[in-house]
Every structure is written in C-alpha cells, then in structure tokens.
Image 1 (cartoon, rainbow, N blue to C red):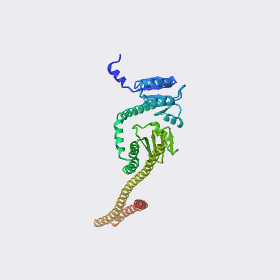
Image 2: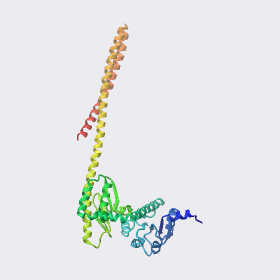
Image 3: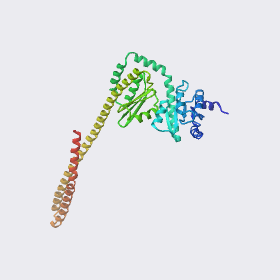
Image 4: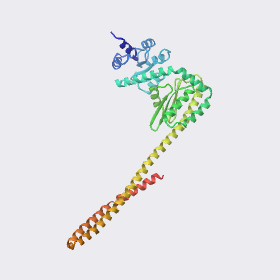
Length: 383
C-alpha cells in the first residue's frame, strides 16, 4: 500500500498520453518513460480525443499515420478545444519531409520526433516539452498584468511612432540577442505574437514572444529561410530577409487591410534590423582588426628588441676577443716565454677569432630575414 509521501510524489509527476496504433511502439516509449512520468496509452485518435479532456495530460506523444483518424486531425481538434489547446503535442512519426513538418506545424504541433528514435532523444524532447509547458503556465499566470501594461504603453503612441522608436532603439543594440529581443518586444507592443531568428557571423539567435522557443517553428524557419521571401501557413506568416526571419502568429486572414498593414510594419522592422546587423558586423570586424594590430605591434617590438640584442652581442663578443688577444700576448711576452711557444698559442687564438666571426657571418641571412619581417609588420600596421 502506498504511503502519503509516495502518493504526493505520484501526483507531482508530469502526465504523458501516448497515442500510437502499434502496441510495440507504445511499449518502447513506456519502457523509456515509465517511473519518471505518469503515463496513459491509447491506440487511436478517437480514444485520444475522449481521454485528453478528462485526464488533461501535460504532453501528448502523437503518431501521425493511424487508421480512422490521422494525428494531424487529432492535433487540430485538440488545439481547437479550450480544455486541451495548451497541451504540448509532439508528433512521433516515420514521416520526415518538409511538407510533413509544415503540416504538423500548421495544425498546431509543438515538436517532432522521427522514428526510429533512441531513448536519449525521446527523453530530451519530453524534457523540452515539459519546460515549455512550465513556462507557458508561468506566462498565463502573468498574462493579465502583462496585457494591462502593454495596453497602457500603447495608449500614448501610434504605430508610426512605434516604428520610429524601434529604429532609434536599434542603435542601442550592440549584440544580436539584444536586437532579436527588441523585435519581439516591439511586435508584442503592436499586438502581435512572434518568433524571430537573426543569422549573423555564422551563428543564429532565436527569440519568441511566448517565452519558450518552439523547436518545430525554428526547424521550419531554418528550412525556408533561404528559399522563400515570405510564406503563409494558415494564420501564420514568415518573412525572410538576408539576416533576419520574422514569424507572426495569429494573422487576421479574413481582414485583407489589416493583414497587409501588419506585413508593412514587419517589413519596416526587418529592413531596419538588416541595417543594424550590417553595422554590428562591421563594428565587430573593426574590433577584431584592432586586436590583431595590437598583437602585431607587440610582435614588432619583440623583434626590434631581439635585433638590438643580437647586434650588441656580436659587438661585445668581437671586442672581447680583441681584448683577449692583446692581453694574452702581453702576458706571454712579459713572462719571457719563447717566441716559438707564443706563436702556436696566438695561432690558436686567431683561429678561434675567425671561427667566431664565421658564426656571426653565418647569421647574416637570418638577420636579413629578421629585418624583412619587421618591415612587413610595419607595413601592415600602417595600412
């Protein structure tokens, strides 16, 4: 019999509804997820529609190809119901074309797993779904206050003024994340929900007005960002520019005038963003060049010091050899040593002197190369 602590722990587990007409697939997912989550399994779309409003799962793992009713239709009905519209729905399917993913996104899906999957991938996707669900609840909790604040902020300004404010604010953004958040905040102030992607310097930066980034939205944007200037997917519109894509949700598809006005506003925002991205890229390039020039200056200074030390070393060594020859000759003569003994010793010293000169003479090509390197560095610094 379960004790009170165990009952509380069970009640705090996240709830997952698994929907697949193949029992084997259900058993695999159950084996991976059981213990961590509270699970229910159904084998067709109608049972899912009957179970979900009563049990209210946090996440539904939904197969697409099922007899009777497809996963797309099930998802569409769930998202169209007030009781189940906020359930995180992750499609689990062997279908993996762009058309399949777009179809899943159009009916309201939140993520997509391709069969066959491994345990780690499934656990990670489920973890992301629960994080998004948690953030969604937090956003819903603060929604009323946020809406009041947004309405109050918009009361004193019109859309043209907000566009001008946006353009002015872009000059305060020196990082791409900041710029993406500014777009999301501005579109939210205009009354639109959006997901924004900025692509710059080999990286991408995603922001979403809903807080949690929808992996399926990002996947769709990545697939079409270099293919279509603009794409309508039901009540959603994606506008693509070279460095930025803006996805607007909840488009008024039945109001052509409003629809066109939103697109015009987004075009202004996107074009201003493109200008700022180019400016940030140029600024970062200048900063990188400045850093390189500083390194080159230090290198040139080190080479100059090395050249000076080498010249001093050569001069001191030759001077020392001359002094040694004079001193030794004087001492040998003063000691009344026979000339027949002095000459062999002096010959050895002269030989050592010549070998020392040969060593330094052999370094002349290297010294010439050193001078050439310093001249090249100076030309780079002076450009």
